[in-house]
Structure formats: structure tokens, C-alpha cells
Length: 212
Image 1: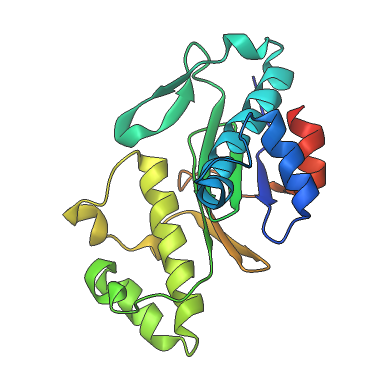
Image 2: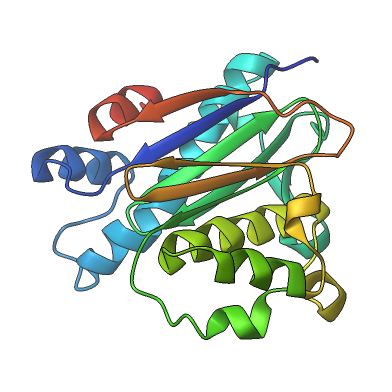
């Protein structure tokens, strides 16, 4: 099956509380839960991402959602068992997530801009990445651009942050980075493949329609 590469970005931050509760009720998360704030910022994006992905896959593959079972390969990379040619990747951050559906292996990462410990750059960036980082006046922007690219590349490869990986230069890879409000998103594919893709942005209202 040939798919058009598409990136779905869902940001639920600052959403209407009523809309959030509607989504929570669909996913069977109760407001009375003592971990409510944690659930809507961390757990809700994960559950909603998997639900949205299953709906999209079901439509594209022409199979019921009950047939789509998540399995995990190298580095915990997810795929649908018995539908390995349906390529996708998922990433989550506070109150948001991103899903990339592709015709081949890919990796995606999404991060929300926030205050960071910039010394992390010295620990995790390669020499080439440090040069890029140091050349930028806005260090936070530079940090998230590099970090999401490293995460997307790692997820494309299906590897962890090994020494060899940390020493790689993500700017020599086939990665596209873009920004949506305070979200940074990077997508990685094979160097020989085209990296043009459609972008679909959902808010909490439109997400509800897609996961019902």
C-alpha cells in the first residue's frame, strides 16, 4: 500500500476545559482521579495519539481497529503486527502529540519549548551540533531544533542514545524541522527519500471528531 506522507500535530494546551472533559470521558479518564493534572498533560496525549493512529490506519488499511495490535521493534519502535508495511511513528510532549504516517521507515519527535538547562548541550551534542548551537543567539530555539532532530533520527533508526549516536551529526541526515506556536517538530527518513509531506493540525474539538 502506497501512502502519502502526512504529519498530524495535536495541541491541547489552553483548550476549553469542557472539550478536555469530553475527550477524557471518551477515553475513560475520570476528573476525580487524584492524578488528573498529570493524566491530561502526560497520559492523555499518549492515549489520544494511539486512538487517532488506529482510526487512520483502519481507514487506510480497510481493517477493523480490533485487528490492529501494537508491537515493538528495535529501541521500542512501534508497529502494527501483521501490517508492517504501514509505517508510522509517534511522539508526545506536554498536552500535545505528533503522529507521522509514511510510505517507509520514519521517526518523529515533538517538544514544547520550555526553560532548559543549557549545559545539556555540552553533554549530548556532537561537535558539529555544538558549533551550530553556539552560532545561534537564541539558545533555546537552537537547543530544541537540535534535540528534536536527534530524537527523530534515533527513532528512525530504532536506537537509543548510545555513544556512537551521540557523536553523530544530525545536520548531515535527512531531517525536516518546523515549528507550530511553541511546539518544535522534526521528522526523519532515509537520506535517499523525499521528505515533503502534508501537515494536519488538530485542536481538541477536531480531535474529538477523529477519535470517536
